[in-house]
Length: 327
Image 1 (cartoon, helix red, strand yellow):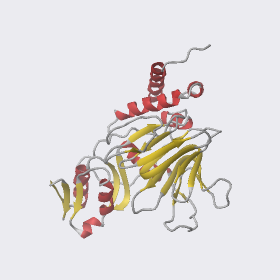
Image 2: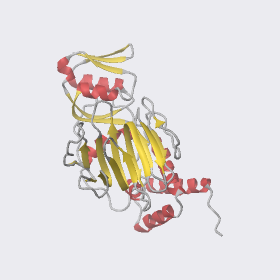
Image 3: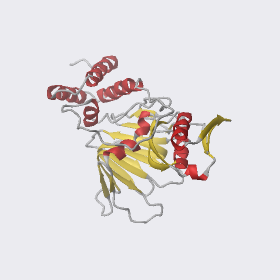
Image 4: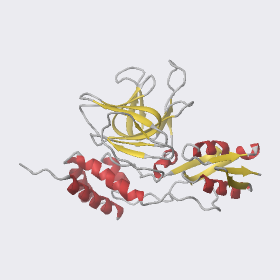
């Protein structure tokens, strides 16, 4: 009988693999060896994710300098080098596409019996019993109900990024108002904010919205987005194809950042309010409508205010728990 590996040994091996991935793309032989290792024990996927999170946690999502001038996002000048990179390899094995956010507590838990929630400015990484993971954004909540025939998660409110590993016996279902979201494997984000329609974005793989096998079920493939209609019974719109840059901006919160591209300044201020108790007040209507583009640290509204003031020739003050912008 083969002796079962200890959790400590698995964690140490996972850390070695992450260190190897950090040094550069894997060769085909190394990639096959990693995939074989991950397939050997379901605990190894969770260990790989923990090692990845701890490694990335040291990469600070720092604030932008005061003189930063927001510029539009642009695609890379050249394609990435050949081989298997850290991100690609982790994504293929069902544990990747995750960055350890430095907004607050980064927690790794097992299957819960009750709701899991995050507070203001907190991001939590949850590893489920099957190796699937959920990263909860600030002020979010979910409930997990795993059974013999289905893996079911209900997003109560907020925003979550799901990484689903295959299980031929049990589909992965996210309960949404009116329609379930089903996935066999892949990565996707669901956003369910108060007063706004449910927003689904697929990063990798594909998910079905609606009951499997029904005529009104909709397939969402990689790099697509679908906003559910508010009114019950309204036909679903056609999924919108989006660029990889758009996907990266929408998921920037996993790295402790907020990305804007042409958003109104007052909309940007409202987004910052999801992450910090420091309010951004804009006391000039014309300034509130100015478009903002750039990547900003979610935990630093003051740094955002200084950057905006320098670009739009505005005045910034910080008092009474608020960042005040005027002209």
